Image 1 (cartoon, rainbow, N blue to C red):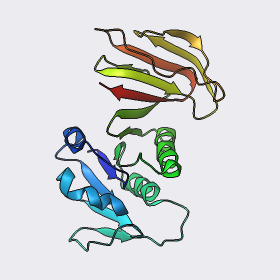
Image 2: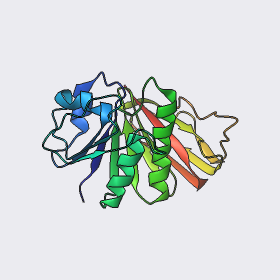
Image 3: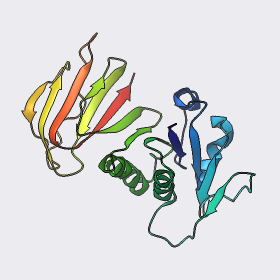
Length: 207
């Protein structure tokens, strides 16, 4: 099944970079103020969701779900849940990391939510790509300047890193001591990261 791309309202500066990650058959969901990216992303919405407290409803000839302003889920969280109901397994989130730290952390936690359901999820912003490492290894090639591993769940053991400047074997990273920041891929190699027990947030920083 094709990928679901969810567009939030956080700032995007490098539209060329973001457009390069999009595919012609992506299913595009725009969330409320994410609509401000519509013209620059040059993609037609397949679905619009939002309470329209930060962007007016454009009343396009597109399926639109109008949400109440008072609710437990943010517009982005609702969009993810709606896409899961519609059968999507692969997710890309853009415009979800920005000045609002509360919304940023909430959106990063969506990667954990998707992983818990056996779905794949990635967040891309102007500088980095984020994903969860859990049951299977993740690989980082040397197109990235740095990569970091953060414990955001409270449990991450049996961590192994190979092909990097700082390698690990059967290690543990705790929430209280985040020492897995700013590692580097060995030039000409592909780094591998795996976690035997628990989950880690992998952040890859582009050159």
